[in-house]
Amino acid sequence: MNATMEQRLRDELHQFRQDGIYKKLNYIDSPQAPRVTMEGRGQIIILSSNNYLALSNEPSVVRAGKDALERFGAGTASVRFICGTFTVHRELERELAELVGTESSLTYVSCWNANEGLFATLTGPDDIIISDRLNHASIIDAMRLAKSISKCETAVYEHSDLDDLKAKLEASRNKRTRYVVSDGIFSMEGDVAKLAGILELAREHDAVVVVDDSHATGVLGTTGRGTAEHVGVLGEVDIITSTLGKALGGAAGGFTASSAALTDYLTQRARPQLFSNALPCAVAGSALGAVRYLRSHPERVTALHENARYFREQLLARGFKPLEGETPIIPVILGETAKAIQMSNLLLDEGVFVTGFGFPVVPKGEARVRCQVSAGHTKDDLDQALEAFVKVGTRLKLI
Ligand SMILES: *Cc1c(COP(=O)(O)O)cnc(C)c1O
Image (cartoon, rainbow, N blue to C red):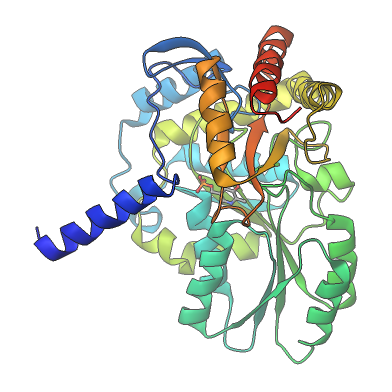
């Protein structure tokens, strides 16, 4: 190992610890669930996972993964276009398209890859991508990649500011294709994109709308079909990307859903499709199990919505000020990063795991603990977590 480089890494890691931004890994020794065994302690209430529908450990989902593992073996040993496409991919992609209301879909090993594969493949030098300021890191990096590969232009509009989006659209009238891209649910704020307004503006300007629904698939809408269902525009979004690793927590992976022509084009051209192995069959199998579970259990989505409403309401009743919203992402703003980390540590002492986020993940002075509620939380789980919040909040003089 190069000693100069090694020393530089050590110095920087030391600085992370000094600044209180060093992330300690917490090892879980049980399935991901509303309560887990973490760092050797049992019954820790998890209020920070993306396991919104508690499907990670749902028996039929786990069985679907095991069945696929036994039927198709462990690895795909190939990229899709050579010999890495299995029948389970076809079934999963058909059912994902049906779920989110598009003609077709195409899976990747992550939504990160789906986003990188999308813009870099579709755009050319006469195109522009117009992005919400608070979009996910994978969209930001996907835009950087597209810009360097295809020489397209990029622009950023202020968060959920439709006037600013309109201005950016008007300023780019001369472009061949204008893409407008937004998260469905914004992960740090927990708010929902103004999708109806975005679609209306995009239609006026003949622009293409891309929604990354990673936090919303399985979460929003009465049957969990995502932001489009929630807003009443199912089937109207041009391109949806999403993850299989959040509410569809049976698995990992991601997908792009759109017209058959678009997903076929990506199959032919997207570099992560051409040069990276296909989604493992066991993972595709458990994801398919999760999609089927969701379709036959809309009550799971209702339970999630009710738990989110209850937790938000009860935090308010106890004197906390969570950001307003209607999603299961419930951030409580605390200000300084050190305070968020301290709150998170003290909550863990009380048996509740909630992550604190500070700069640079969120703006300076807006550090927060971000609660994420699951359909699997019982009222007891939530009440116990609320008690811990009151105890720690009182100690830190937050309430
Ligand atoms: C979590 C998330 C991703 C990443 O999904 P992976 O499948 O884990 O790569 C992408 N986009 C958004 C908006 C997300 O919230």
